[in-house]
Length: 492
View 1 (spheres, rainbow, N blue to C red):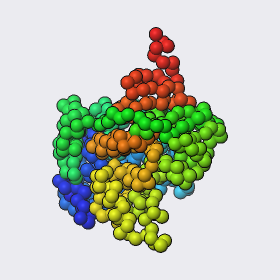
View 2: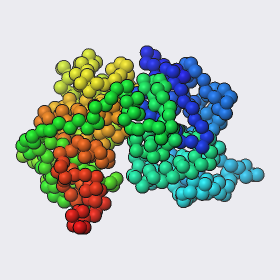
View 3: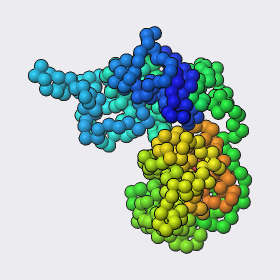
């Protein structure tokens, strides 16, 4: 299969074979062509060359409805349900069953919804409104919708990116149930522990082309990574040992009722401090409050010894703070705007002359940070939405690093990006700390926390329950504190 968008060749010689009763992994770096392949399978794009067969017969998908009729369904990591409709109404939207009087047969909708969730082995109330459902439950509704359409090929695109470990395990149970019922599942993920635990075969793609397909049992992580990046990744966590300098950030008694309480810590120049904990522990909320996005009820913040006014991102920026948010698409970028405009959005005034901002100034400023970050793009005038997830993250980093901050908050800096780009981001954070920047990193990936942090602050239910130096932090000690358990020494 081949597909180009202007001068950009997204797919070139891409191949994929899915079998019934199998969970098949598709892995590759961001920009390797995975999303384009999925959209072609789903009928969103038409290939320039190549073919698709279903049950051995050639098929042509000119629109998504064609793929759906052929039994193909895609479950995205962030489903888009109608929030004011019930679960059953969302499942049957646009194809509601009718009674003999041509009215909507709501009893049948509820009955068939119950049947499909029974098949999946999870209890979901058909009459419950979609508003307020967790991401995990929304994904289950999308899976149920696909099954009521008699889907035989289910594509799961980064389904666990926003899920807790418990929710992810429930999803895996559902996936295995569907596999045993003869459905073909395509699983796309950057988390290798999930890939090897769940999948039967692994297809590796690179630069829009097929590289290999082997049983998961015949592969290991190092082999897959080398095939993905076309080179050997020396180390995923290239942490430079640095001498911490003077205190740049001081937080005392920070409290927001019902969210976090009595948060206190310091960060010195040249230091990477990680906020670890389970989903919902309050880590992101603390960072948002420190940067002024949200207000807090008590406490104080000092930057380089100077008190920081709360509730004002503008004041935070003026004090030398920068925030790379958790959700880059919703909070970090304007997806319809150009790459250059996004990368320079924090420096508009500085780049303007007599109140006018030229595209040349934008492009030059963007390149000055894009090159060291190894940003890959077609044209700087292209919408930032055309970039892969990893390159979008680099644009967010570029935009904030351009402000010359002294303290950088990074919330889930490598979520949803491939292993090669992860190593680049880690190398950048380590180099910035070595140059004297203070880095506060929120991460749900324990290996990332342990590999990159000089100190680990563990949160549980809005409180800091442990502070661990680099040489004493390990997975057990972090998880004990993250679940509110006493330290291991206290149990002995």
